[in-house]
Image (cartoon, rainbow, N blue to C red; front, side, top):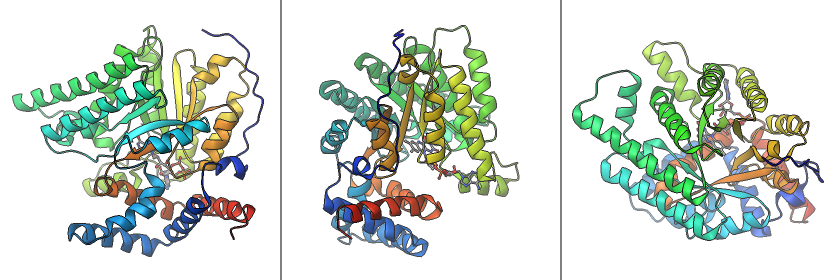
Length: 398
Ligand SMILES: Cc1cc2nc3c(=O)[nH]c(=O)nc-3n(C[C@H](O)[C@H](O)[C@H](O)COP(=O)(O)OP(=O)(O)OC[C@H]3O[C@@H](n4cnc5c(N)ncnc54)[C@H](O)[C@@H]3O)c2cc1C
């Protein structure tokens, strides 16, 4: 390991607008400002989401409008090749890319194989271009939701289902193996709690197989779940003594309402916190645990929350060894919280953006989620908008 002492020359300043929006043209800035203003109106977002789905179903010519507005802001392009422009622009600002094929859950074997092949192509692209250090994988893109759910409920699988699950594991193994060989990192996304246990088991299996010297594979822990600190502690205990670097990506969690509604409908205790402050505490606690175990953990804090980001930066700055800094990563979604990503990168931290790509129709559920998220998160919305407005003023565009 590298024992060099780190000399952080710049401090992290999330209010530095010039750095935050340095890659954006005036036109892109105006578009972002307009978009975030519109997304602030819940009724508009709801109506817009429904209207767009119907318009696409009816074949109305709305694709062009979506492509030049919300899609352009949140997605890299229709293909991985098309996303290269965004990738290069970010790389010039030292922001790394997590390439994310935005296919939502697939339903059949040809669909799973298609997603696997697309991701394998991305690994090859990453290897040849050298500026895509990460790819993300959603397990419901390469395996059946029903089978994950049955496994979690400990229901017996038919022979056919057993063979299908073995194929899912093989698809994941092919991706992780190719990533290890190409020196790429794989972020496995976390999904609904009622599918997650077999997904965790697959993630742990892959980590044991590929994470001997570095974290090739990261599992994602949703810290809104009441059981995740216990899971993390237990994982550390179980892996003690093994030659494995645990890849831990922490998020707050994307399916809060869905989790609460299902638990209420089916009459089991909610698996997620009901108070935001509890999720926040659990997120910061996970940071502390990972930092205490950095000799065998690599951490990615995937968040737009400024307080959590500052907390990790402050904790990290107490460690001056380079290897500590090499094991900590920050990540945000493309089109959101540029003030965090670009200022973290500029200050020398490892910062990345999840960059989704895919055709307009495929990415629509993702785009609707982004619009809804930006509507419902009080504070986040006004922060994003006020930063954009401040930058417009700075450039004398307002
Ligand atoms: C790079 C990246 C990768 C991601 N990958 C995944 C993934 O694999 N799986 C996944 O599920 N999500 C993922 N997300 C989304 C993430 O889980 C959050 O939904 C999103 O980032 C908002 O949380 P925050 O920490 O950014 O900000 P904040 O605005 O501080 O937090 C909002 C979050 O707090 C939680 N919350 C809000 N209200 C309450 C409440 N009343 N009680 C309890 N908790 C509450 C919810 O999780 C909500 O999303 C990812 C996000 C990023 C940036």
